[in-house]
Amino acid sequence: MKCVCPECKNDVDMSAYPTAAVGHVIECNTCGIVLEVRKIENGVVETEIVDEGK
Image: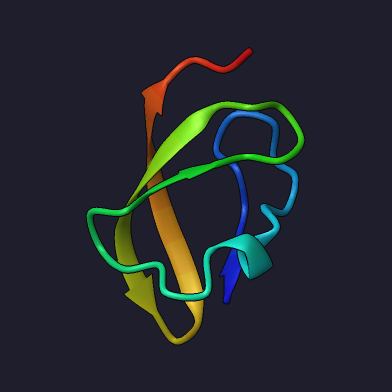
């Protein structure tokens, strides 16, 4: 799966979330922002910011 952080625009390491699904919360490994998975389509994960990072 591929996911780009909407905040820092870097790729999120999805290997830490092998069972990610809509509604799951993930964290950007670059900027630390908390994201909620909104949609997964064709291996691309779309997220929404839930909480500002560290």
